[in-house]
Length: 498
Image (cartoon, rainbow, N blue to C red; front, side):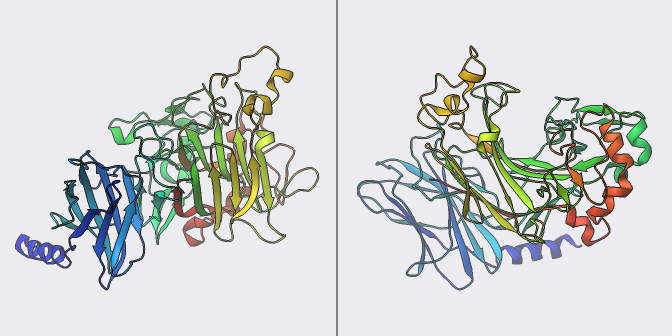
């Protein structure tokens, strides 16, 4: 295309809409800050990102990040009584406006507190089209964070992604063949066959490694995930996670999938998290949405805890010995905790829910919720309470009766004043789709019409599984809807203060 024509198009596009100035003021001497953006037809959302005395570069998250979804008296208003401002403070901010389905930013703004308090309407310095801030909005200061003494009020939205686009600044791909310590049959990578966004939905879909590398690669190739640039470095070397070589009995992970995390972009302590998701369908698929501690404050797993918001098995007809269905018509929420492996009190903090006969969690979207306070954790399915955990005043050590079952061992939480330890630290979000492994699918389960093709004690479990591909792969419906029956689908992720 002619450069002059291209420039004309870009200039015309950039000038198609100009973000109006935003008024910034104080409501009182106590420092209650107010943002007011004038309403006009076509605006559907205004988002404010701001920090006090700290410059925000480009579209980075601020100390405070708020989406306003409806106007009041002709303005899109945000007020924050938690901010304490004094004369001379500078509020650095940027404003995002959704106008006629497009996003426009007013970047690099600042407002200085003077006496008497001033009201200013800053002219935009940068106006660009961009995705909605409801996509990937994060707050760097969250309830329980030590980075600031100022905390948002209860019910404040501090993280939201409704997947207008795939925000890789928020969601980091794990790259490893080590899985989660259960010798699962997948390896995790960053590939748009396995993780992508379409129509405001995130898809995490397992595929066959052979589709990319060929069948011979499984028994004679080398899977090298070490990487070179920062974007493709292996994220987990445990359990031979960064490099594996295939042989006849020890094949390379036959499934390729994705695992996403926010460990470097968002973590929170105490809050309310709600995720709308649809589970995958297909034998031996294992989806999970969960949280891990950002720092292992009390030691290695499970001493520092794990919170499983939802786990599921993709099988349509999987049952325990007593006939209980444990496939895709069942979901579970679990907390893992204990002084060291294998001491783990998860059985006391687990709940499962089965849908009525004929219905599954793969049929549509459900809301999986957690309300986490300093007093306990409550898990919800479609706003109905399914698990309420309060360890009592003496905390999880007494709750697990570890002194009685294993006298003489050390309590890793003994020096914490919080009864909720280890669940009194910041945790981050993980979403992944695993397959198989040597633990989550019990050998005692019965599967119809084809039995489980491997034993958890087998040294060739991955090979045994893959040799039975003709039995399980058709249940993934790979030739229908782009194979997306086998994908976990996520509509939204939201976290609020409590």
